[in-house]
Image 1: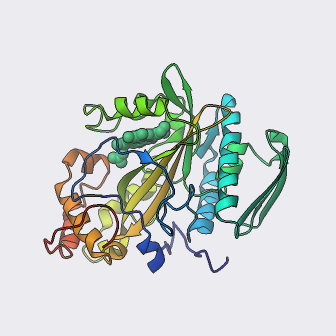
Image 2: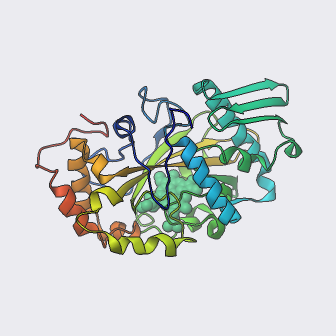
Image 3: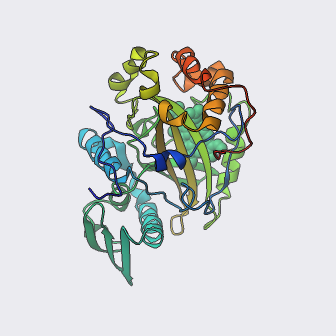
Length: 346
Ligand code: HEM
């Protein structure tokens, strides 16, 4: 593994950690001291150099280890990757979107040579080299969506658009916050969002769907979602709940700083050119509480967010049981000083 990428695990001995650089560029999701659901979408434009918004797809120090973890999940449970037959074209659209963006943004790691439909793709950190014919499935080792998402950080779902609705009909989902592609596949926008508390009454999903049905090619948008995870486990799926659910009962005041993680999802939405489908990349970033509190503004703010969050949200996100322990830990870093607006560290 090159110097650019960590040799680390997201299971077993859990050697995952963030370098000082990764902490400094962590996508802290709270622009203010309180949190409630909203239609929090903004254009996915290139952001600050060095930040996770700099490029369309962020590649960071966890890349190689995350891809190894994905392969382990798929070996145990192939149903984490599914694509209904009519979604293959959307898979090619996604493959193109990712290959073109990564070869442009990270030429030191990725390269793409296109000669008509004859393409040659190289990923140096994963030692992958592949010649194939674009739009000809027989020239890849697996379907196009599976092929490209085995090599790309983050979960992905593909939504077909018809009957004024979006239908989740393909995906690669191995780093999810307690939801199941196998359960949701074939559902419509409001159906797969049914378990979320309060947001339906606030009409968040009505407005979000209306917006997404009009999403334009070349004008992607992004939003944050977040939750809490004990230990740096990427695969917190319902399928594996017996493996990670009980860990919530073993947290103590001594271990919380190291074991409790804020889990942030940078979600983007892109219209795809040939299929008219929408791809929804869900990129998961983890940070230990002890890493997060090295940034004073974030420590103060996270304390206030957790303290004031409605019980319905803390229950849905699965951390109501450990909320008192979290508050004891975080309150030591909150001196009551005002925090500056926005997500960036001072
Ligand atoms: C096509 C794109 C989208 C997909 C595939 C998607 C999928 C999901 C899924 C599977 C869940 C978990 C539901 C469960 O508990 O089983 C979820 C949660 C949620 N989604 Fe979406 N979503 C999409 C877009 C959006 C948009 C645009 C918004 C709002 C603007 C949104 C807001 C939410 C919220 C607030 C939650 C609850 C998250 C939490 O508290 O942890 N989603 N979404």
